[in-house]
Image 1 (cartoon, rainbow, N blue to C red):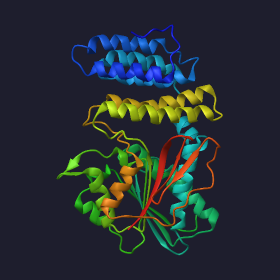
Image 2: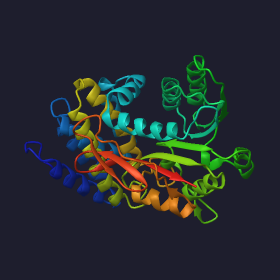
Image 3: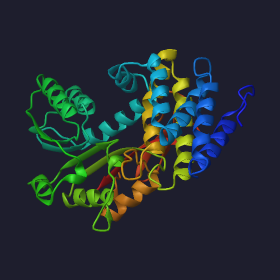
Length: 369
């Protein structure tokens, strides 16, 4: 039984959560575990201790597996800490060092492959609201590069995001001296038909492919091949000159929840420590953790067929790229330093990683045909 009068460490909290998880997997222990999980969560002082938010979010995710009503009560409790999502996105883009460093390197690799007078074609997988592409267009202007044209094939399953991306890219294109052509594709990439892929085959070499935090959402198996591998195989058939992927470096794809929970704890524990090291208000720091809490919830409480946050270790992505027929990009070079001293940088032939001083958290992977 958990004692609220003790002062447990992070390791103690994780040990308790492992015990709770083991009980949730047994039919006779589920009911008692649910009430103990709620008491455990109530004992955490998330108002006073920044380190208590991580175990609270894990407990909340495990409660969702057992009792949606109790989970909803915990959601209502957290409402008082809500920060508008647009504010969180702006914080991630402008103040959070990992996102700054990752986006900067990804765009630098894409920009390096673009030249004045060239007809640029970009397959953008998971464009979201177009923030990264807008930044890319602004950088082209700053560098004085003027392609003959810039064509974007934007794949996005969220229709409202896709429409917003079209508007944002259109506004960014107004001050440019080259045409920007936007082709929206409202779909999950694994749902593209063979005819859809055929239409994406470039008439001229030089196709660029960018996928930032998108490919890990792919799930399912088709004809004995994981859809992730099938998508990479289809991309390779397009013969792109450069593929840039940005992906978290943690194994949340594993079917065993015990393994996923350990990887999840290590990954988000290091991520939350990095958030605490950034000069943010308590409100914004807590808001960012709640934002990532949605991913924790998906990883731990969603059913195997519905889970979306299927992050993988960087070595797995490298193996998938190699199996699809890609080679590492020889032009990839790590930056000399991260945007903050607390950001650690690792690198290999296929990737540059950004994370804490002890654990890589996000990798930029670059490949060529």
